[in-house]
Amino acid sequence: MSDIEIITFGCRLNAYESEVMRKHAKDAGLESAVIVNTCAVTQESVRQARQAIRKARRMRPDAKIVVTGCAAQIDPAAFAAMAEVDHVIGNHEKTQGSTFKALSVEDTERVKVNDIMSVTETAGHLIDGFGTQARAYVQIQNGCDHRCTFCIIPYGRGPSRSVPAGEVVAQVRRLVENGYAEIVLTGVDITAYGADLPGDITLGKLAAKVLALVPELPRLRLSSIDSVEADAALLKLIAEEERLMPHLHLSLQAGDDLTLKRMKRRHSREHGVRFCEEVRALRPDMVFGADLIAGFPTESDAMFAGSLSLVDDCGLTFLHVFPFSARPGTAAARMRRLHGAIVAERAAALREKGIEALRRHLANAKGRHIQVLMESEGRGRAADFTPVAIETGEGAGQLVDAVVSGHDGSALLARMR
Image 1 (cartoon, rainbow, N blue to C red):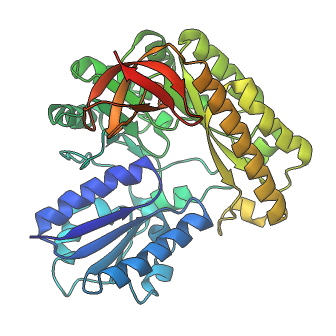
Image 2: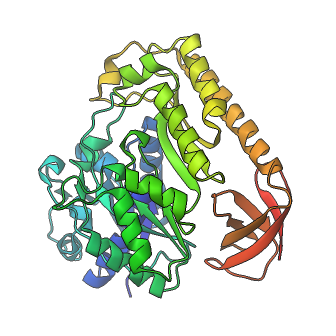
């Protein structure tokens, strides 16, 4: 019996691909292996992956250690140089069944990382589930054609490419049949979905197709979107379809126009604020999260103040705050950087602003009727992705109707209806 452990860092797409690898490894009969699926968004994420590799070798000295993911794709030599590592495979190779068949024999090559920029298709992969996780992720797209100056991910993921709609629907249907009440459509740049496919298909039209063709799916959620690419069909769906969850995570990054220009973002501050206003007018219960970078090179106090005030101006609730991390090979790594203490101070201020925004959101929910997707014993998420603490005998993946009785500063407190 195979003993496969997968350690996943980073995004929801990585979580999905880890399950694809689990299936391939099982089908190939790979035995006693630890697969480390890395992230390259920040230097810290790479450090954590290297730390996990060393720990895995200490804990499982006889296991085959395989490293993959964005950090391995971008710098395979660095991971191959680690004595703890047996194999390094690229982001394209990790989704191929043939890779794991080769890993199950002793004489396969140690490093198998091809040019990700040459990959032109993203195949759909049928998987049955996500272990004990409450929700399931479905990949609809991979790669990115944009070149934001701070971002290394296009070099780890390659060009934007979409999974055909029929394959997405088939995967969603399979997961729903296996008991998943919530599906998350995920990718690197999902609002770019469909541009490389024949016909007229967009993210909004895909989501509408999923909901129409899988009517038994209770909850559909989107991962991070780029507001400047949001299509008319998506906005229509937000306004009309209750099964599309009222939560959008936006790739805003900053609240100052000059900073956004230096980041090579395609939206202005005004656009970000206006988008949130328009969406909230369509769906008053919509809750927004956002990625924000603190301490981008050349950022002045006034520029940073624009990011702080963006939280209120957009009505953001959930913040993912990233202290600027210079990634070798990106344009921002060559810009004049701020002192590390300033970056840390601004990141802390943004996080504190996020805590205040979340507490306001929690306080306003008292008495509200909500539906909770249980994630573990006594914990779950409301439709708008707010954490909920609730006493119930229902297990992970079950939907529970509840009433909000208060909050504890980080989650809603609720009781069964």
